[in-house]
Image (tube, helix red, strand yellow):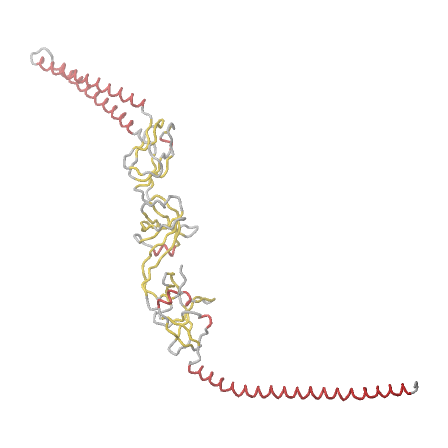
Length: 407
């Protein structure tokens, strides 16, 4: 039993080892067959694809030659439009004619102040009064002196009249008549002096009332009751004559050269959306050497939104020109400057350098570079190249302008 068991086990081991190589060979053969089938399938597919793509490539080339496969682009023929040139500027607001009102006389203690800033006043209206008790008494004294002088003059005249009657009878000499005539004349002269002194006092008393030199709007008040003022006290009130205001618009040299007196302008105070219409009434004859700017003075009527010393912006109408107008999407720029793409008669893209003008609600004006009858690429010009053949599609002018971003 013991001798036979090893022999049986040995026979079993030899059977297993003899079957392993054959199994591996079968697996290898199967993998090779599968690989060959896959390679054959790929080769067949590539052969089919090549046969089908060749006609497609040939057709695409043919289409490109006659423009059938070209990119479709929207074009616009801008023509020429009347464009109003607008110049924008900023500056400070001020009274067009500012009138400082001070003490016209000797001054004194202020008794009443009758107006406040923001009030309208008429020409000659009393703004404030000064205590005139002393001056009033002085005027009364001078009036009394006038009456005394007048009484002396009347007496001298009466004596002269009586003397003339006596000289005819020989009681009084002609020399006495001359003396009495001189006395009468001196008395009349004293009357004139007294009257002049009284008139001067009365005029000074009238000047104690501070009055508006012209109708306008009170801007500032620098006096209070009880304050002692004199000719050296400075301006007690500031009045804008007629309530007229102005904007001191700062413009560059180039813009200032385009503006003329009388052109309309629209002023918008900062912090407000009120548009106030005015016009340029004066242009500065000099240019500031530091900032190279000049001043255009824009007159505007009174408006509650205008406060002198405030800041405002202005849009000045500087004439009208006839030029092409394009949507902003049609104008591109690079290191060489601004340019557009136009489509020529052969439907080829051509680069055209342009000079842009002002921005309007209708689009961007072209100052030079276009006549207005060209076919201009309206959109996506950055994806095109000069010389490329395209398929132009006309675009309505209204659609092009509506696509322009609002400013």
